[in-house]
Amino acid sequence: MGGAEKTPKLSAGETWRALYAHFRPHRWVVALGALLTLVGAATGLAQPLAAKALVDRLGEDGSITGILLLLTGLVVLGTAIESVGAYILERTAESVVLAARRGLIGRLLRLRLPEVERTQPGDLMSRVTSDTTLLRAVTTQSIVSATTGGLTFIATIVLMGFMDPVLLGVTLGVIVLIGSAFALVLPKIAQATQRSQEAVGRISTVLERAFGAFRTLKASGAEEREAAVVEDAARDAWRHGVRSAKWQALASSSIGLAIQISFLAVLGIGGARVASGAISISTLIAFLLFLFYLIDPVSRLVDAASQYQVGTAAIARIIEAERLETEQVGPPGADSSADPSKEASAGGRSAPASVVFEDVTFRYRDGLPLVHHGVSFEVPGAGMTAFVGPSGAGKTTVFGLIERFYDATGGRILVDGRDVRDWPLGELRASIGYVEQDAPVLAGTLRENLVFAAPDATDERIRDVLLRTRLERLVEQLPDGLETLVGHRGSKLSGGERQRVAIARALLRGPRLLLLDEATSQLDAVNEMALRDVVAEVAREVTVLVVAHRLSTVTLADRIVVMDAGKVRAVGTHEELVRDDPLYGELAATQFLASAR
Image (cartoon, rainbow, N blue to C red; front, side, top):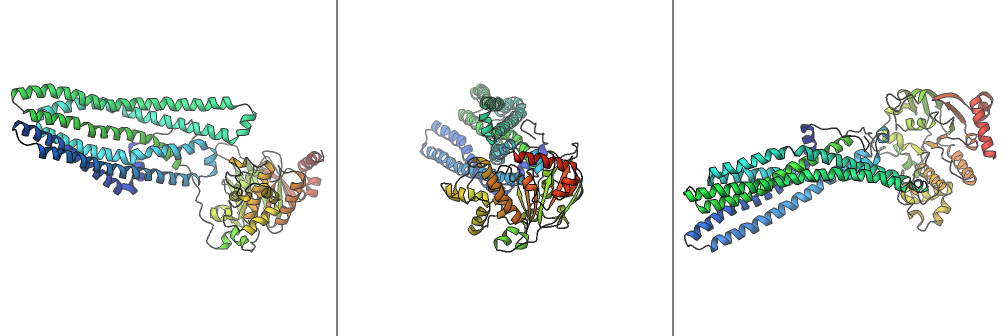
């Protein structure tokens, strides 16, 4: 579902049900706005009748003051009522957009990791921002325009029929002829709008990629190439947007054309009927006023149809995002035993977690090769277990399966003797501290990053973790201390500082199981040694699993799991594996030489 993919077409029933779901919570407010709009329209319908009475009164040399005052009052009253109705509808439209964005954001943040990895983030962002904006017109104005426009159109036609059925027949004939051509335009509006929104999604995708690796972009001299890619998507959006505007302009101009042709036909035929005495001049004037008044309800109907087509394009993309598979992540629980961070902050200690893999197989998607081929190992409790092996051996995937970012294809993964699929996700992840390989830091303040996984952490615990991870000097040097902004993805911090922030964030949670994926790879020797001591200290009370390539980290482990090509080939201590496993011996010798240099 990347930005370049075509959004599947929804049936009319699916589209309407989806639109009604957004409209339903506001239906009574929309009904009030529609009622006020209808009342305003009704005052307009009375104006041609008053004009007829005015012409008749002039022919009788009677006073016209009262009729003029009535006409003025109708105009003022109708405008005031319609203004109130328009405000109610605009306010409700914004509420529809807010509710749609709130629901979509909540859903996207609960997406399963495989769904996110198959999706372009920029395209998802455009669905939250751009596509939801298109809902505002179709879910309120379009519905009200269709309702009030339809009722007003019918009322106007009925009154015109009472005036003169012959002239009404002429008018309807012209409207039906041009309206048939207009119906052919509507699908083109929806198609062009959908393609334009897809192109907007591609713009967001390319920009998100560029800003996510901004230094690499500049160092590679790729500004012009990336700008060309963005411009290509922007031109695509412009092209389809212009196409949509063209069809909408054609639809709007058809209204004026229908009325103008009707006016000429009615004027010619009506003039002949006045000359023959079939109708009075006042009747012809009133009929012509009704004809021009017909522009408003017809315009409402045309706008409703156009907005509906635009809305169908937006709702199709929103529904596609809503159909992505999500996780059911609930709160970890009300008691402190379910939330290790709360217990740790209170000074308590939770038992370290045990981890068991039983003949686990895994592939990322159907049709892809297996990443794990019957992986089995056991980590009984407190202590450090290191995972080593060549690149692509499946080490990092072990952590993803424990966190249930992915579900195993076969076999079982047990945490504390309980299958991870039987754990509530919130409770499982509340027990785990996880430091990713690239140690991401979020835009915001340093404090916000530290307490991201433990929002209730006290200042005392924050200070303690800062000392343990050697971040206290960094905080002292920052202009605003913990309240200093760290930039997009932590761009104002060095790689080693970002890594230490990520480790501090995990430790602050007070986990029972700590997963470290190359957590010291960007640290200098002094800080690496200090953090190794911290990890060793934590491992006395917490289960620590670490993916490591540095021999200095591996030799501290109580047990080492050697992986190769998605299998566990050996488990033991450093000395045992150097003696008994050729692959580990080779890796250890290579890394020893690397560290010696």
